[in-house]
Image (cartoon, rainbow, N blue to C red; front, side):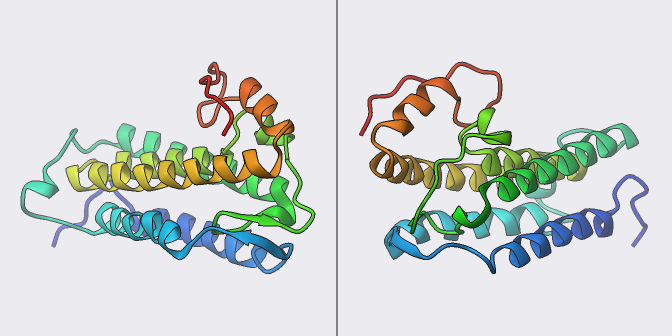
Length: 199
């Protein structure tokens, strides 16, 4: 099979693996969980998230899912790579700022803090913002329909998780979080927060 000069999967995979390694190492030191979402709630976004990730990264060569969305080019590759690097860096920055309050599931930690500094001053869910940007960048480098569909599925899963997280934060910080939400957008920096009634 001829090598694609406009796509270097090992570099992209390496960047994702480096990010995942950082994530695993930093996950070793977190606060004690005092409240956790139900297993059903977690599965509702984990299962489609995994399915979307597989669809994004699976090297399809034939069939309608492999249809090209734009021609292969170095320009598309470098744009996608830049988005991937920027997204992973933004997510890692947010993870570092969150510190021991972080959890892979939606939880409330013992002595949980409402972080509003660093990337949390730009968006309420900067890890999701970074991941969506990185996933979009990966899809741009691939340039095929299956990649776009994979990103769409993962984004829908993250949005579901985001809604659960918002409920938890409003209950954990009934006075502070509604004010924070009124000042800072959920995902898109420099946009006006969407008004929503406190839950």
